[in-house]
Amino acid sequence: MMMSAPVATPTFSAAPAYLAFAAFGSLWGVWGAALPQIRDQAGVTDGQLGTALLFVGAGALPAMLLTGRASDRWGHRIPAAGVVSLALAGMVLALIARGPLSLNLALLALGAASGATDVAINAVAGATERACRRPVITRAHAAFSAAVVVASLLTGALRHVQAPLPVMFGPVLVVSLVAARRLLAGGGPQALPATAAASPPAAFPQLAESRQRAVLIGVGLVAALAFAVENAHQSWGAIYLGDVLTVSPAWTAVAPALFATVVAITRYAAGWLAHLDPRTLLLAGGLVATVGTATVAVAPTAWLALVGLAGAAAGTAVLFPTLLSASTRHVDEAVRGQATSTIATTAYLGFLLGPVLVGQLADGFDLRWAMAGVAGIAAIFTVVAGPAVRAAPHTT
Image (tube, rainbow, N blue to C red; front, side, top):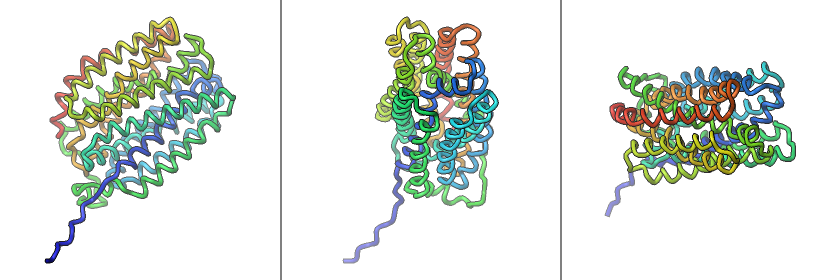
């Protein structure tokens, strides 16, 4: 009896996406825990630091706009280059940030590398999710958060022994090189599904419908509120514990580590709840983030502040991954990078402005009032999340 030859079907691994997000998280874990030392080494005030954070966005936004189309054309080479350049930018920051000017320039480079990497690795995760039919985006973001935890704790230990900043950023480069090698080795989509593979390799297809782009921008604006809350906690949590509640430098690292730990656990758990209506996750997340952030703002002790921080982390954990997954699930693979870029670039405005708002409110009032302002942003998200999700299915 003759047996027909088996038809070869592509297999896709989520490992490149997870490793890329782990490299991304390791950088920001070091950043969050080392930020007090970066501020002190640069010799800047809270207000100057808040202004300096604008340069992160100044570098990131143009890079994010350009990366989507580049990712659609060149695939995994873009995120591979991104994670390595991000690690190198962190090392440059550690070496040259010794005044307001050098800090601003270093954050400009860091922002450009971060923005490009953000779009590219989210596009990888989105393509992998569609190919594997698993909640890869949420779990990849969980890998990011888990890496933040490890990097934050390691950085706290290094701060305790008074290690210099370049030593703190060194492990990030190692993780990034491993992730880049895995991305370039393949095993995930790019080799993308057939729609992308059929596209002429030199072409730059664009999102065809202006309404589709408008809806994606609207989703990005809602995601910006979530990012504002998340990055406000991640960037200022250590400083809040040290300056307001006067804990030791080693213990300040608990804030970003705890935040990222709860986010990672919540995102892994949310991966098993992908069958739920996205509005359920988003509205619940917004409420929990609001209450948790308000608790941080009024907490009289470090322990209560950490409880509130954990609540804020659990609330914000599901917001961006859920919005991104729902709004790009059925986007044509040939324009996935552009769709991801549209949402991520818009959302990044919140990532940029959240920490800046905290810095300016801290200068004008104090850090407690700044955290109260962050709670207000979370409350606004809770109100507008439902309409954004109702619009998202029309992008399919």
